[in-house]
Image (cartoon, rainbow, N blue to C red):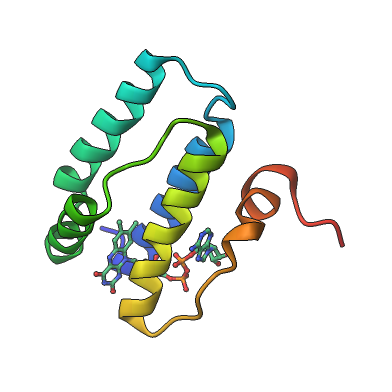
Length: 106
Ligand code: FAD
């Protein structure tokens, strides 16, 4: 099985890619789908102590998904919470779309 770092990297790639393709103007249905997905994701993530902390975070900071920008930033902040816990650098959330959707300009 993948170790928790490999699992983490692949999972963040999936989640940020979902944010990158999330509609700019989502319908109410699309908004409830992403919220349901994130809620189930947090329950099913196959690293139980990671999942527990993430569920706790999501209770405090409920998913915001009224637009791509809002969801992308919500997810970036959630990822930063994990970065902080692990002593990793905080990512500048103004750059999330460049990192995950449009690509770096350099
Ligand atoms: P990752 O954190 O995996 O990031 C991958 C890439 O995303 C980075 O290289 C960077 O380009 C980009 N990035 C970094 N920060 C952001 C951001 N804020 N927004 C957008 N893009 C960003 N590991 C544990 O040891 N303990 C835990 O409790 C734990 N909880 C986790 C909970 C969840 C929900 C997930 C998905 C993962 C969790 N992990 C946990 C794994 C951890 O977050 C990392 O994935 C792992 O440590 C590998 O880190 P990495 O340095 O390769 O970069």
